[in-house]
Length: 440
Image 1: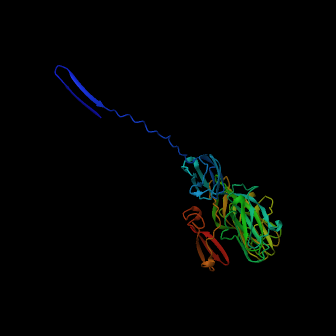
Image 2 (image 1 turned 135 degrees about the horizontal axis):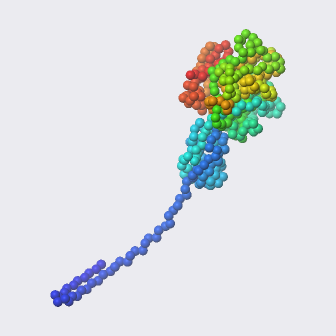
Image 3 (image 1 turned 90 degrees about the vertical axis):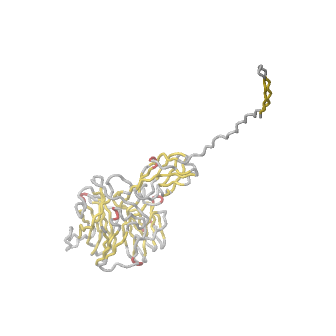
């Protein structure tokens, strides 16, 4: 505070007195050093940058801040598995996902990496790679006969099938059956689905073509609810690819061979005898183009046979492989789907072991080779899922028609996708045969 007074005279003398106190300047308050929080993870690259929709691609993720990672996602789907190698590297296995380009993100306690162009991964549908058929398993020789409720894991990758194959095409045959049963084939490592690939009565030998996703350790699982031997031949596989090679072009089913004498079709009267073969022209027939074709998808049916036997389909001009596509006992009518590479002159050869049999061939699509001017559809594998069982609904009567919605069922494509047409398939029953075709 301060006080002062003063007076003076006009002759210039003055006197004054005052008292005051000045407060000291306060010392500055000590300040703490700034707190620097750990930064969140950053993804700067992924390699490879694409994989098949079936998943299973091993991807290396590079960046920073990966220590303690709790999650890795491809888009909104968690990686099938991942391993933190270091603060700057993660190895992850891609999950199954629809065709799309997605961001790969890493999550730690410090947050989730921001999306960027550097973290993008593209899921592509698989293209088909046709192979000469070869035998993978014959439990009659390996001692692995399946007991009731038994299963075994079969390695399908290795050799000519790469580790990144998303699915394989197998011809599976159940034989030496002793009771009614069914066989389910599915990717190893997943829960066995409510589905079947083969069904039989006691004593029957039954084949079927199976397309199945590749599971854990490059394996598929075979399960049987009844004692049986199993024979497995590999026909080809699906994996990522660029360009038209291996893409599929569906066709309206068309008959291109019928050896029954009065059929009026190509090869009429060409019944196969014991140990004989027949070459069937597939390019330029039934909608299959003359060029740009690697393999064809056909339905082969044997009828009018006289002895137990088997049929093998293989590219014309190559050695007959140890494999079979159809098996039967005398007097049976047996069909099966066959995917087979095209051989010399655009032909496929069919071999019959013993007795005689007539052969009916319907073509329903083809796979392009690298010279094709256009690309077709790619393949996305799914874990098998049941979408229809008329035992629980209404059976298809003689001459009846049943329209089945397949789009969006069991993990399938939406109804507006080209692979699904309108998302429906019509089943026509005529004289004991069932004919499925796409609804347009």
